[in-house]
Length: 397
Image 1 (cartoon, rainbow, N blue to C red):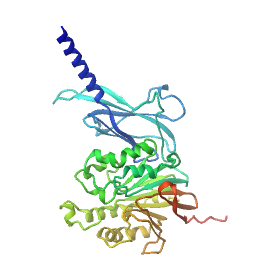
Image 2 (cartoon, one colour):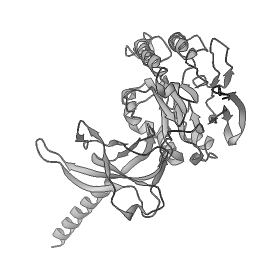
Image 3 (spheres, rainbow, N blue to C red):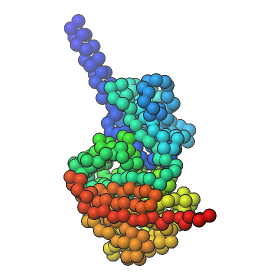
Image 4 (cartoon, one colour):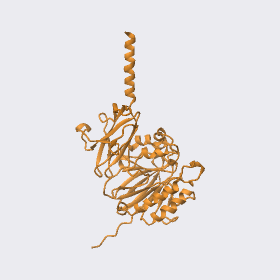
């Protein structure tokens, strides 16, 4: 009898432990924010069917009513056999406040030709704490504020110390402008390098605008990086509007020739940059770009400094297009030291600010100027630049 009791107790304990083992392991964080949507990303300890519930952030309890479920779907099929979850929220209102809750239900079995069976549900807590809030990008207005980080190279603790004094509720988004990791080797490294720190600091409610650096093209897991910062286009480069402010996110690729031994025969960035440039020529002619009150370019490798192949190729391809496009400012990193290049220097018709690897850049846009502050440890402002915007002529009549 005692043996049976201990056997049953052991079985129940094992089942309870297995159920408790299923949990949300990282996240959530927001990326690819637009005026009508955003993508929520998180991971679980085991494969799961996941969804997000959203409600207006109007002060009411999240339990006030039922909410629609948003799933990760591909060609009409909800995805379940995975531990990385990226759910796109669509049909939201511009400049509106929302709050959300994430859910994941463990897939306990899915035999061939058999039905999927499900276990316990893990979810973010909306009972003892408030649900995660966020605000979509506005569809009008010339005011925009954001933070830019670059060249962290996995120094998560340094990043947290650097950002300690920032009130992220005061900014619309945070730009990661390249080389947040030194290479991309596996999922746990990505989270340890900077994503977990971002979640702790801001990313549950303030979205990440991700731009790849040259180091993030390296490593066995680098081909999976887009899965952690998914975009609607499937490309790292793209165009975003925050009210009347337009941001061009340009992917630099690698900084050495494709044939360099360091790339093990895997690099094809010359052709990639040429394809990106063809897209860029169309992007700067779009209404989204042309109607903007301010136009800011985000690019990890500065094209007009240095003589490495990546700089030179970016200069040859991108600069003729950007010089004719009415760009107001370019923000870069890569060099691990601060520098400023005013309009007219080195063949650029717009100013270029290069941030170092131990500071963040704060950018504030108004209807008349762009202000950039380079802020170092302990919140010390090391450099400030102001760039007047070219305002449209006013008809006196």
